Image (cartoon, rainbow, N blue to C red):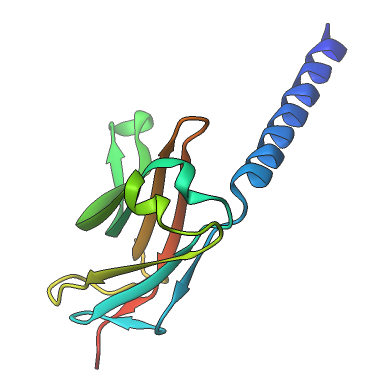
Length: 159
């Protein structure tokens, strides 16, 4: 019975690895090209999203810029006390590309994207406890399989 359990666990890991490999071949390894480095609050963030797969097969592609602050939240009391990290979205801006806009793009192309960084938001502080960071989420909807990726963006306050 114990050997069967560990065999099952091994099969689950192999199945997950094969699924990840299939996703890599289907979607490729996308990345974000920064036009500048780093970015500062109050300026325009210009990036190019590079998807090495054919984006024209997507029904929609949404790119969302957000500022996230993590906080430690403690619940319960006494011996039942539990602390967990909770992410709070402080700022959000999004741009969505329709299927017709994506159809004009070539396979493995750069999709230029611009966001205005607000002056009144906190900068990136990854070493802080708890940290605050900026990220771009890419989320695509397709007939065969949906796509999702996250990219950290260096946003700082100008001194």
